[in-house]
Each structure stands twice: as C-alpha cells, then as structure tokens.
Length: 256
Image 1 (spheres, rainbow, N blue to C red):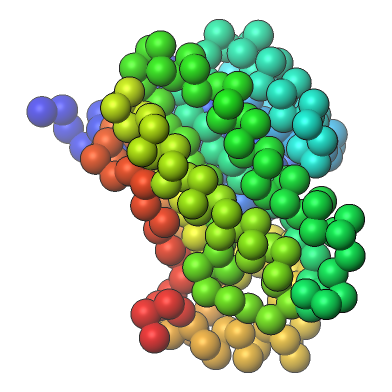
Image 2 (cartoon, rainbow, N blue to C red):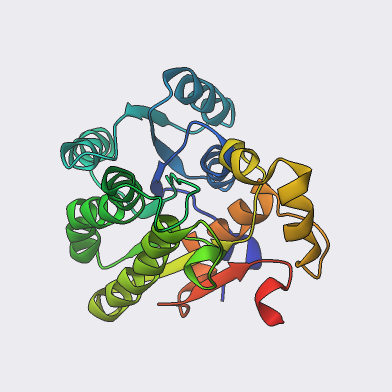
C-alpha cells in the first residue's frame, strides 16, 4: 500500500473547476493545484480567472482559463471542448458554479427560477455529459458537485436555490449508480453558509446572518478552505469507496 501522501496526491491529474474566478471555486483550484493537479478554470470574471491562473502556475501547475456563461446550453459544452482540447481528458470534474435569488416562492418569477436551475443543475449535467465518456474510457474519474445545506433542509426564500441543489443531489446519486462500475466516483459536498461574495449577499447583514449562525452548533459559518480540503479528499484515490454521498459541511446544523 502506498503512503498517505501518495493516496492524496493528484499528480498527473487534470481537473475542471467551474465558478473558479472567486470564492470556493478559486480556493478549490488552489488546493487541487497544491496537490499536483493541472486546472481548467471556468468562470465569467476575466480578471478573476487571470488571478487564479497566476496562482496555479506559481505552484508549478498548468492552468487554462476558460470564460463561459453556464446559464446557457452552449456555455458548458464549449467549456468542456476547450478543456479537452487543452488537456486531452479531464480526470476530475468539480461543478462548483452557483447562483441564487433570495425570494419567496410566490415572488420568484419564472426567469429567476430558470436562471438558478440552469446554472446550478443543468450546467453540471451538461458538463458531465461531455466529460464523463473519456473517464469511462480510461476507467477512472471523479465527479464532485458542490451542492448546499439548502439541498437537504428547507430555508425561507430559497425555493429556486433549494430545488436546484436538491435536484443536484439526486442527479449525483444517479451518476453514482450509472458510473461506479467504471471506477468513477460521484459525490456532493453540501456546505452551510460560506462567506463568499454570494454568501455575503445573502447572509452578510448581521440582522439575518446572526440568527442563522445561532442555529449552527459550531457557532460560525464555514471557510472556503474547509470546502476545498474535502474536495481534495474526494478527488483523490483515498476516497475511492465513497460514492453517491451528500457530505455536509455544516458545523452540526443538520444534526439537530
């Protein structure tokens, strides 16, 4: 048996990470690169992509920055084509990009519903559809979908977001059932509030954030590195028997 460092190493692996230009996605790119992976960083923010490319390359890894609008059908497909053109194959797919609208179900217009579900649920399906055939051929792969605590428990004003993340959790389980026989592990990571720019938008006001924090036994919100470290584990061979799971990073919120 190899040592633990080898089991967690991503040397020689290529990862595609969406939502890579900031927040959780940026940190995932950095942590996977530290573990040895080359990165296809997908996002909309050109300046953010240039920054993550510099950081990954400073670690001695290759980084391809790909601008894409994941709310469209062509965006995910084109991102996958560019990544495959650069690397030949993708060993690790991290569907991290996410958007939200904070409105009651009654007040959520159809265009908001479609936007949230197109980015959070349809884009992961399209990217997996484009990239997993190569994983099947090489008999190895990892699909890691960044979901949310909101996909497991209901929160006010999160109808569209919760539906998209609950759907992503079930999509991941079906991925596991269909692809585990090809040595492809598919799992979701379900964080509680992480104070990324999107997290700040929803929970940054202490009048809203403090009552939410009080419901978390750990007494705080999560950190981007805590999500990225779990993604590293799921991307490595150390997690090869973990498949079809929704893994919560919630400080005990759902234990109550």
